[in-house]
Image (tube, rainbow, N blue to C red; front, side, top):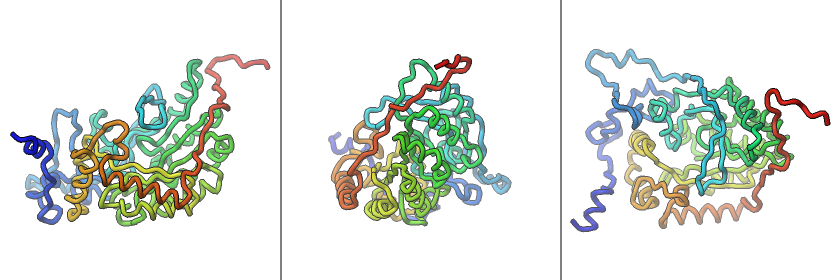
Length: 387
């Protein structure tokens, strides 16, 4: 077999859909899609079993109209009883070595979310389960204070929102993120937050006080300015105008604000790079970054289903460009290139981003957080000093 033939077998060309979305013969993935009414307001089309499950369950009509009896997906929140709250990583291509995730799963329902596969570790689906069956860590503030009080703890910036969004809708009731910020403020510990929720402005009082001492910064992800695309792709996240307003309010409060154009999806939202940066700069953002679409594990098929259902005419073009930027694959997890991709298209996106930032005066100065003010919390039962 020739080398070219071998490559073709490993990476078959993306087939263009020949029928409208919803036709099972041409779209086998859509045959497992959940009825639209049951998943109204959700991001993904299906709820396929995780990769560790021994059985795969698919809802189908057996002729007895049983599907009509199934209830719509509703958000439920269970307790996560983890004994530690700070997660560590040694990835060489990200700027932090520790993070906190107040929740597992995310109600925002972003179809492209690279954190979806983590739900498979819990025996649940990275699809609709990820955005409807959530786990909360109500003891996170107490656990954090205990870990910060350890004698061998060395302070460095804690990142929050790097996996699931700490300001997703259920935070309004649970207020776990606010409790975490209260602990960090008392300990004068630096924190960097990533979110796509306008709910972050609720905590401006704490964040502004911390920012005055170089202890806090916030990045808001703006994926698109197109209201229809945003609602389809990120159904329960804040609208683009509200995110820009949050950037403005954070900036006015003296909190270093960054806009993240993430993820950039070729042939879907890449044409908006300059407009998003311009809108964010006018809202007060001083820094900007971007991340190319990532499709690890189950995310690839979930994104494929969503694209076929909503933008079937762009399906072939989108995946062709994705593979052009991922070395011929749907995803390349190589450190150093997984965030930006490779090849001419990835290079062009990078240059467009840099030129736009230069014109708008973004990234002229990088905000740096400090650990100089850190005060180790008192451990339970520890005697207070007389002096």
